[in-house]
Length: 145
Length: 117
Image (cartoon, rainbow over all chains, first blue to last red; front, side, top):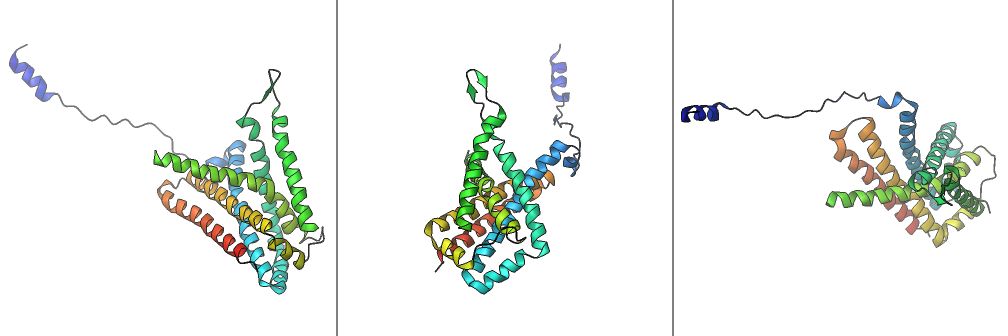
């Protein structure tokens, strides 16, 4: 190969920037409606909204309690309105969903083995439910005493 | 590296709030939100509740009950908006609103519980 030729190759070789782009299908905003598993995931995540609503209502309850008997009576009256009851019943079911899914994470997070065999998921989650029962009874006892 | 350590901190708040919410909120919500208003159970008197709330241990309990679940909400709600609505460009705004809300709620709870006569 002559020197001239080599020079030509050098100058004519053009390197285009190769910019790889992965093929990605556009995902619909409603992707979570397609499958029950996805819907369950979104419902579980959305359970955090009723959790926040509960805290806000509790803060209003606390304020009413500190403002005097009349203010607290007004708050209790609001709790008895149909809108508040519907909201709280829906919230209650969402919070139950949170509790159950949260407790059932325990066997996913740790595999406990006894005599070489893995404990069934139900048995690993059971202490959570027992604790829940005890804590709820104690709290209810203080409130209702 | 700094980002990672922040994430771990927020995740711990999320996780602690998740435990508190799972253990405590169903009982509270069932009593105050459903059973008392529907007349299934006789609600406690105003005097009893006020006496209960005056105890220091109840104040600490209520502070934890209000604060940690809000941080739990902030974490979950942020990522639900992020994944569900695909609004990645609003990430900073959503982050500020969620955690800002949790901080405001915590401050309000602290203020109310601190100022009980």
